[in-house]
Image 1: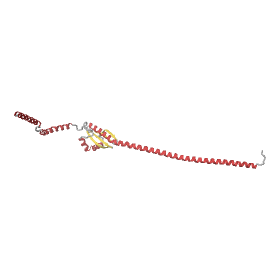
Image 2: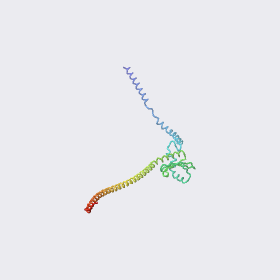
Image 3: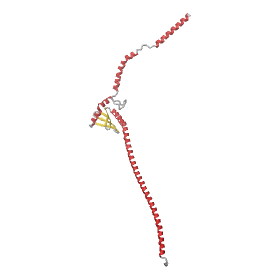
Image 4: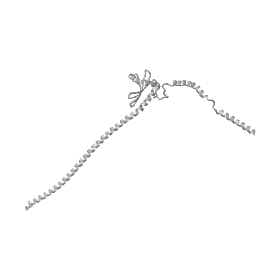
Length: 248
């Protein structure tokens, strides 16, 4: 009995020892990662900032492949806000600008102008020859890209105007054809009315002529009967006058 009790106590102690070891392994050691991250954060920020600055310095001021041509760079936006429209209008009074390209779509259009003295390009989007947007740049590739974008925009903007112009012309043509057709119909109607009136007149004349012919036929018949009667009377009177005279 004493032996069994010692065996159980030894086994129990072993289980407790194993359980303690497992619990110690499962417990997380004191977390110093937050402190380490806090300590490392300033270092990371310090090293990351120059990298961003270097990347910005390496990026060209007028990106072409990475951005849409219609998106203005900060310099272009500043120049546009400073009055590129007024500047270009002032320059157009002289003869120093060269017109390289121009696209018209309805009342909209785009132009690429070149100022050779400063090797500067002016790209314009206009409506009814009034400047809407003017972009000034010294980058030829950028200027060509903006011009293509403005030309495409002018085409898109003019779609409604071109469609309206065509519809107006089609409506005017249709109205003119309706007027011509209606005039033709009126002429035919007038001709038909005249024809019907003439037909009615002819029919009346035919009826009158037929009635007159019948009346004349009756009068002829009566006259012939009267003639025969008179001739018979003449013969009778002749016989009476010549009565008793020798006959040859």
